[in-house]
Each structure stands twice: as structure tokens, then as C-alpha cells.
Amino acid sequence: MSPAVLDRILSKLPHQEDNRLLVGFANKDDAAVFLIGENLALVQTADFFTPIVDDPYFFGQIAAANALSDVYAMGGQPLTALTLVCYPENGDPDTLEQILAGGMEKMMEANCIVVGGHTVRDSDVKFGYAVTGTVNPAQVWSNDGVRPGDVLILTKPLGTGVIATAIRSGKADFKWIEAATDAMRRLNRDAAGAVKPLKHAIHSATDITGFGFLGHAWEMATASRVTLRFNHDRFELLEGSLECAQKGFFAGGLKKNREFIGECLRFAPNVPYEIQQILFDPQTSGGLLIAVDPNSADTACDLLAAKGCSCMRVGEAMEQTSPLLEVF
Image 1: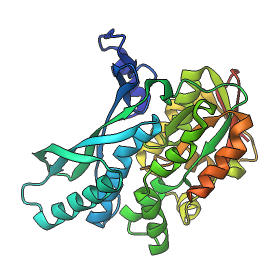
Image 2: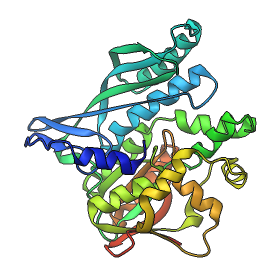
Image 3: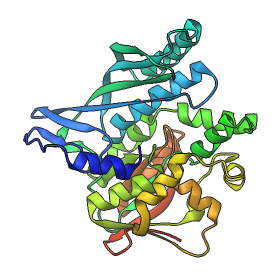
Image 4: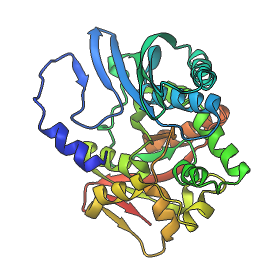
């Protein structure tokens, strides 16, 4: 479903008031945060999707990493998970076993306990999790905390969407598939944990998934009432993603993401068309986009590097102007 349609539907739902709800869907954040004690809040999220790679074990791992990512993006620690499965009645049980095994491996890596789940018959395979985590309510990373002057850091390269489209077309090189799979399987735990010690210097965070890099950046800019400015030369791209973009391997969601942002974005004339498309490209289990105090940006990059994570200083936040997003 397009962001615009979803936004319109959510705006018509009854508004629930509860002082314990610290983060709901008002700002289109990554997960909900619900206060249950003075120093303890629950983080709750759910995500599932159709296979993005051919290998069922890797698909299970990617789906798990993607679902867990929303908790890490809020500054939380995953605690329990419920499995969500849609599977054909005549589907190969061995394939389903491999999907579940891949997901379980990642959940164990995250120290997140799978406590149950739900399975339904469906013509298409879909898999994912509903994840519950915990967070100190004073240390929640919501998407509305960006401040003018903040440095914007991205922790994974872009390009999973165009590569996945090439995979579905049977045109993806093995090296491209391998690079994208490795990126999508990697938990955002290391990146989130690396910058946790900076505490109040981390003003905001979000993870990059289906709305694409610019879609999630738009959500940050809107919620925080700032303008975000990005340098297109500072983005790392997955091997093969530029070639896929040049050959037109674009998912349908890319066009919807571009339409959704519309006039809220300005590209400088020097930004190549292929890079523009990749910035709109729907991502799966992408990295964290972190807004950090400029005085702590170097330290954040050092901490990320020590954990083996990417640290792209892709832009900065400014006082709000029109448009809300700029790429030069």
C-alpha cells in the first residue's frame, strides 16, 4: 500500500488518548512505545512480507532482522517475538522449515525469545514477526527529535530494492545477490548498541525500509519540523545496485514513494537520475538513519567503525524551509 493511501486511512481512525502511550502512529514512527513503569517502557512492532531472495533460510533471516530493526531504531532491546506465517496449503513443508529455521537463528542471535505465533493458509508465502522489546522511557529514539545542526549518519549501504527486482527478473549477478543478502541479514543491533553510550547526543533515529531512504527521511523532517540536506556523493551503494538502476529494475513501490514525497523534495541538477531512484528505492532491513549532535559525530563514527558498521555522514539538519528535503 502506498504511503499516501495509508496516511489517509490512518488519519480517519479514532484518536485514542492515554498518557502511557509515549509513541503511537501520529508521527509514523518505527514502533509504538508504551510506558509500564518509571524506568521501563514496551516497544512493539510487526512486519512481514513475501520472499525477497530465493534461498528460504536466508529469507527467514532477513525477515527476522527486518522485524527486529524497528525495536533497535527506537533505542530498545528486543525481548519476545510472535511468528507470522502465510503459506500455501500444498506448499513444501521442508521450505517452510527452512524459513522458520532462518528466522529462529536470527532471533537467537538477538537474544529474542520466540514465544508463539499464527499461521494462515495463503496462495503466497509471507513471513515475519511481531516483536516486543523494552526501553528506558528517557532514552527513546523517536523520529521527532532532530535538531538544526545535527549530523545525519547512515549505517548500511542502499540498493536492496533494485537488486531484489533484478533477482525476480532472473537478471541479478551472484555477487550482487550475495552482497544484498549479507546486508539484509545483518542485525541493526550492533549499530544501535555502538552509539548507545552517547545517550543524549543521539537526538533521533529511524530505520530505512519500505518507504525508501527519502521516504523515511521525510517522516523525520516532518515530525521534527526541520529541513534535511543530503550529499549524494556520501552514500554507499551495494555492489550491482547502480547497474540495476541503470537497467531500470525498479519496484512498483519506488514510484509510489516518489509520488508521496512530491514537492517536499528538491534535487540539485548534478544528482544523477540513477542515484535519485536509489534514494527512493524501497529497502528491506536497511540501516539506521541517526541524527547526532555535531559535537559527538566523530565519536559516533569511531564507535560504529569499532563494531564493524558503516558510518556514512550523509547530511545535516537545518532550520525548516521549503522544501523539507534537499539532495545536492
